[in-house]
Length: 441
Image 1 (tube, rainbow, N blue to C red):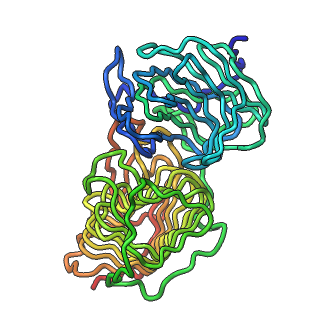
Image 2 (cartoon, helix red, strand yellow; image 1 turned 90 degrees about the horizontal axis):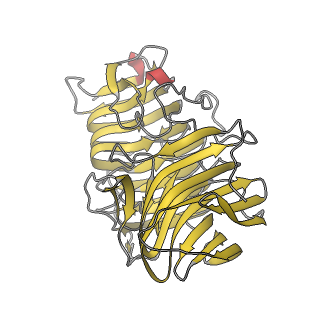
């Protein structure tokens, strides 16, 4: 049975890595680089890791088909090279795996629990490209290899989620990743192109719940209650995680290199609080959906302090960050980020709405009761996509010349290009604040 595309199918995500970048992807484990294999491809080369993953898209995606060209380069014992669909967390997804011993399996994975939905014996050779596909439509999950259905099952285990690439004790190349919808339930991410209009996000004037504030915003740094080594990679958080003000360390190299692992990955609806992130902190915290980050402190920001990937409302309440040569908060997904009672010191930008990710959204930020020192820009937004930034009770410390930019404006561009700076300052359209909202100390 061959893979058939609905006549009304729409491409809502694609990446062929020809720009040499992995913008829009979230790395968890492994060594991922863009290489040349005929054309550009994404390669995972670390055969010693049991769980190397790259994720993209939105956790709100439901009915879609994801396809990718996949070339296994080596297999370890019980290893695999795989395509993922409907990922709601670091270890929850449907998986189509190329495996040693000429085996292909379609699986439902939930942590250490793996349910085989279907399998087939067919030639699986290293150094050979295969086109893998997963169709997820309601409770019907199908796996395809080179356009032929190899397994079809009914499963209600996972209703929605992102796409992903994965290896385990193996290496492989991945290319030409595409997500299409057949018109049943369209994923919320539009196709990245110069003419794609960003999807509107909920208005910042009507958040889903009130954003608590810390009053006044802090100006000092807490003393850790103890140390918590991060020895086993990214810590997955669901529900509420209370760190008891321990220092969690270390991941990454402390630099600005892209695709570093986060220390914490928050499932949709998760809360993390009372945590100190030591250096190096990799890519800090990733929020896969709506999340709350409360009284979290970054002693030395690495790539970014926190990245918001998919959801409608995110809350940063209290806490602080320092030594961010680029950004503190990176907003890649849709929705509104609420920042309150926060302290930032020695930074490039407190907030940046992504201006060249794979998927374009209308994004919003609401910043209240925040104190900043030795920073360049408080918020950067993309006005051509309808982004907004609202500021109240902002205190800028030690800037007698008023050189700190409150609101920087850009025109967002497709992935692979650089956003264009088009101005700064309040305008009542995208940047909202008055002179009384800013205190210069």
